Amino acid sequence: MHWISWETICLPVSEGGLGIRRFGDLVTAFSWKLWWRFRTRDSLWARYMWAKYLQWRILS
Image 1 (cartoon, rainbow, N blue to C red):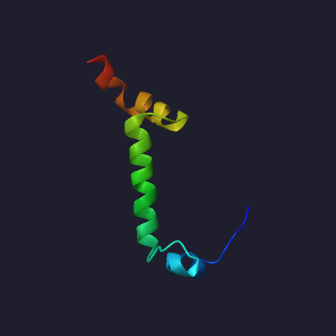
Image 2: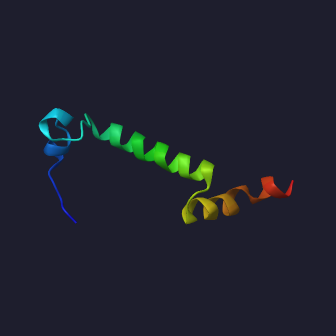
């Protein structure tokens, strides 16, 4: 695993970074990724969460 500094990640893409401006942007991106996986049920985590929290919707 390779670690780079947060300052490098926040650089614009043209300068070798990922273009992330704030930590909140990263949190939002990960939240949307989890939401998408949950909605499409394409991972073990999503299937587990769906069965645990939305099982009542399937049975009704």
